[in-house]
Length: 169
Image 1 (cartoon, rainbow, N blue to C red):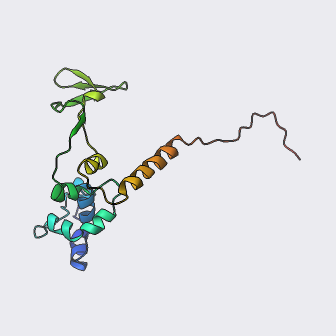
Image 2: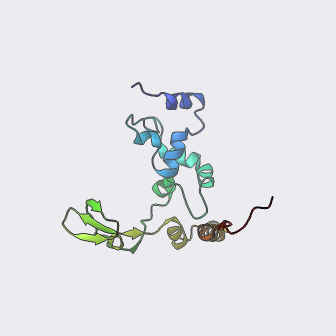
Image 3: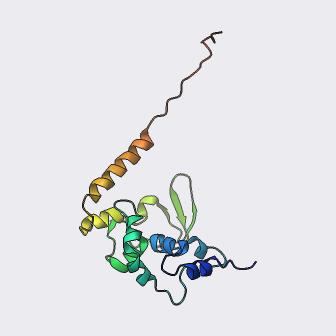
């Protein structure tokens, strides 16, 4: 199967803008195309991801929800390691199967639960700890969380027709 030259064309057309794959890579840490079998990298050999991050930093930050940052932010700007919230930091294994009741069966012969997995700070927690949240960002984050929880718990009520009512003619 021939390779798709999309990225080369996009770079040639407008070298000042990020390609969709470069944007995705800087936002998420990878791009979909890189994950495919053809493995076309998001950046050419003469493009420096860090340089592109700093050039497009404000735009990339504007693409994130309150309390979150792009992957490139953590790679190039804030290199503070995340702190362990719960679980065992030494927990390294290769899981061979998982059961429906939350048990993990590992190659070392031990059975563990999800609670054994290490859980580290999320973006909001580390930004709060390092006092890196923007003005009003904490309020926006909390409001978004409240709305999400409200949406998840919202009860949808459908009128029931139990067959006892007669249709009016």
